[in-house]
Image 1: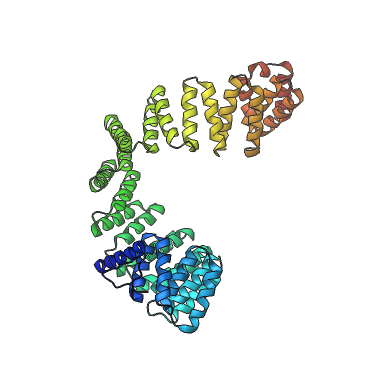
Image 2: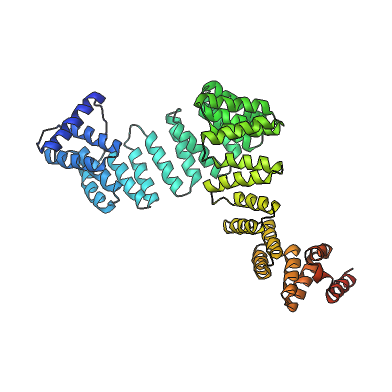
Length: 467
């Protein structure tokens, strides 16, 4: 459906329509005017007014196929798919070569998750269409719903063949290459595309990202440079180039590129954090902190900024300041396991064991199942005299790390402390079988257990048996 009415005329028409609604008068509009009114409301997200316009439009022009198509579109939007299908089917008899009918039919199938049927209908539309680019794009999207990335890619490539500047299709092509884990294929395609469209900043930018993926960093920088030549306000290219320059340890150049993004946007808290980190790596701590603070001043909700400040003070062993700033990060994102883990480490350094244990527990609840997290929490519980809780912690940890002598030695010590002698000996023997050289764990954490005659005798017998 085409909408040719000028913006000024459309405003007049819409204004006249809304005046009619307010006064309960009935004005006559031709079908094209109704189409433009409906299109205006759909574009504005005013569905209720669009429905009123469709109803009135059909009362004045009951045979208008385009108005009926709008009615079908609304029903599909409202997920009234069977009703939409009933209205649509007779329209094929009236105008069987109307491409829009096929598109709406395919949309119904798509909304019903019948994507194969939707694809077949779109393919039928191609046979009668004068402009197939949009249809190939729609077919590509249906294949994406089916996770058939190769077929999706083929159709998006057809879009590019029809319109070399269809950047939406270009992004989708690279998306497919990424899911197919075909970085080399993506690089080959982008280079061939750039032969046809050498000043496409989007393609150069994507090529740079692909080279970054293959660790061809110098080539990546060159690609980002060409993206910048094609569009010197392309912030994404400056950012990606700066990240690669960091990896190449060309930190001063990285800083300059981050600064350009700030100049273009007037502010860029993310870039300020990255500049701060570059200065920190260069040993300029004053400028590092200055940029970190400026970043969180511009965006107080930038948890990564607070995290960088935390790590800065943690590295300086200023744990009180580090604790203050890690709390800022956690207040913003309390579901980030790495924040809670650092929170625990800092509290442990400050000998705030209850808080450290709480943090490790939260870290585990958020999905961090690393061995050192279980060990750190369990060791703190032991220090706090919470032997039962420590035992339960180590038992849980064994589900994730079943062959860890570090867990088995600890479980042995805890079980002996809890006077569960049979379990203590069983875990000790298991630990010795895994790695008897690490028996020092038991000696360091549970000296009173290690120095028991029966325990020393068992260890000695084991070593003599398995020399």
